Length: 286
Image (cartoon, rainbow, N blue to C red; front, top):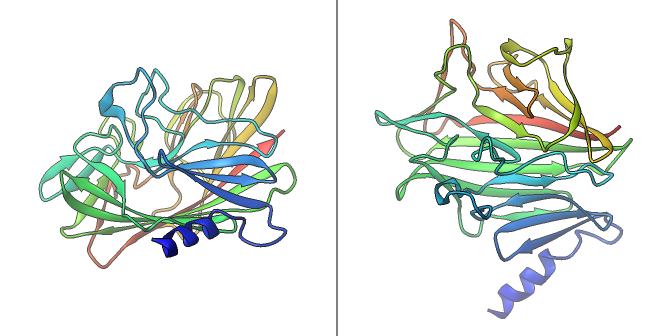
């Protein structure tokens, strides 16, 4: 017990003398990263639920809040129009296992929870292993690694790597079955704002966008008088590039994987053959 307490004290300290990063793990299942004395982000490793929201919306294993270097909160959690949207997250409407369909997007039939003892942090990086469960059966083992680079040029950059491996039977990921849509993948839900602008590598979009391929996408707006933007850029090493996107002026940016084309609409994860997805997230004060 004394050895455990000593280890906990050590991991709660900054990684090294002069480091700008420090971590604080809260008892309610939130891992907070502090840069230069200010909160940079929180990873929710424990189940979270906002007061007044239905119990079946309780969930874990996502990033919220996430701040720009200037302290602007650009993301939202449990928004009233989409209670299932949650900060910076990754989820799929269809998770197929042994002929059964589950939904990690709406948190129906499938729940995530941390593998005990797997949460680690050092410097600007944390890692954790989560399980996807149908009841008590684990169907996917998810390894998350997030590295936060030191702030530079009014920008905070997150490098997010996700590794998914089937725990037994093959697992199929699929986006929305809705006509002309295919949301599901790596996503950001934005806080209320004014003067919303959505950009991609192809320029400013005049309206919502679905099923069109882009190299990256960002949403810019004015949050309580402060202008800021968040951009998502898939890694060149990802399978299935370029990704289609789900882009919404109300405040949603999602890189759809595997998307919906004439050739591909699902992706199967097999035991021993993990799926690895990586993304760069830039938060910039304008």
